[in-house]
Amino acid sequence: MNSRGESSVAIPLLDIEMNATDTAYLVDLIEFFMEDHLFDISISCFNFIIGYQDRSTEIATWIQDKIKNKDLHFKWTVVQPVSVENFGVNLYYTASDQKAIDNMKQSMAVSCNTWTHHEMADEDYFNAIEPKLWDQKRLDFWSKYSTIVIRQETGNGVSIFGLETDIMKTVSHIYKLSKTSVEEKANQEVQQFAAESSQWYAMIDSTRIKFETKLNYEIEKNYNLYCKDKTKFICHIDADSKIVDYTNLTIKDVSKGITLLIGKSAIQEIAIPDNWEYNKKEDITDGYYSIITVTNTQELNKIKSMPSLKNLSITKVERIQNWNLYRRYAIMKAEVTEAVNKYMPSAKVEQCLFHGTDNNKLAAICKKGFDRDYSGSATGSVHGTGTYFAVNAELSRRYGSGLLLVRVLTGIYTKSSDPDKPNLSIIPGSESERVHSVVDIVSNPTMFIISSDNSAYPEYIIHV
Image 1 (cartoon, helix red, strand yellow):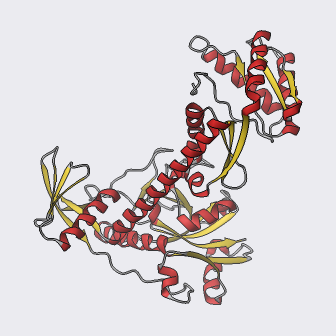
Image 2 (cartoon, rainbow, N blue to C red):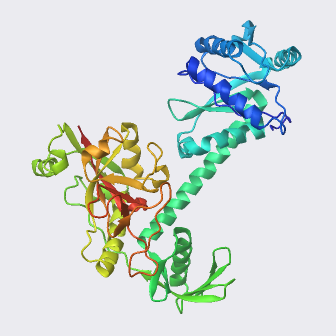
Image 3 (tube, rainbow, N blue to C red):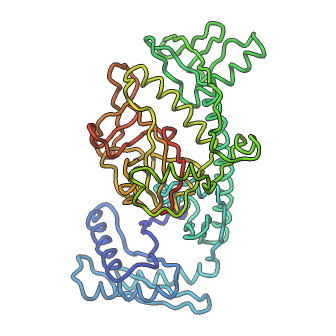
């Protein structure tokens, strides 16, 4: 229900690629929906919206053919076109009876003068909205402001349709959301940097348990204050639910009455890889990333001589130099190495594997790294959620024409279990540490799946 008290059912905008079969299927789906909700809601009208004038008549004709020629459960009125020439708009109505159509015509005549649209671009904010959350965001705008917000197919903006005053409210709200999004992103990056630079942990039964990023940041921030002023040795964190004593290095959970010893891991300095190309060290460590075409013969031959690449016609190899991603990977590698040495010294800490994806996703991976939240978005997650890597390049190429050569911390692994679920297996001999990866076949893996985004570094783009 929107702000004017009008209830509606959200149907995706008709796409320019739709054909007669798609349109007929949409009508069938609407029928199924109406049958399922026959007794809990009353529907008298469906509005179909398409932003392409040259396709609107064609799609309306297909809907009309479906209504005329097929046995439908509900009595649909044949589509009736209404032309509004002075606004350059053609409107098509379908309703349960003629009276409903007349009412809609009258309402449109009243509101048509003020109905308009506005183009808005805000790359950072709209890029931050995940595709699966976009429909909910559109419904929020409709519910609050009676506006229709459509994501543009090209670029990073939106088109907002509605009454002028409602569009102004929507634009104002988007700017507020954008500001909040930027502030949250900056705060997350500060917290992430603190976690990478200074990792705090609690001791539980002789095992070090790391604090999650936000809590780690609070402990480190207050520790820096304590170092400057030793009188501030007690601090309350996590919405006052925990008390940290920096003199005795303890943390107390107020609600549970439990006190634990805490400590701080030393983070060793990480060296820039020898094969990276740069003018000054700051060009790398300032955080900017770059993609460099590999021209060094020794480096190229090493890559091309990999068994699964020998039979491919490689046209170009590009090296990804992203210090932020590499630094996180190096920190994670130290942790995996420690666990491997402790529980299974024979296991390989790191392997060079392949990852296939669409070419249009390569830039995002090079800039931000892998994202396990998109696990299975294209092909499903038969071996559980996580990011998938293959031993053979040809296997990876089945999942997209973009091919990446990736350093992966495979460490201690086990057999994958439930599809579409994360693997939470514990390392044999450990009380709480989880395995580093899962595989399809334990005796001879062809695929590795990791659940930590920092356990993989995209090193090269292989152009075939």
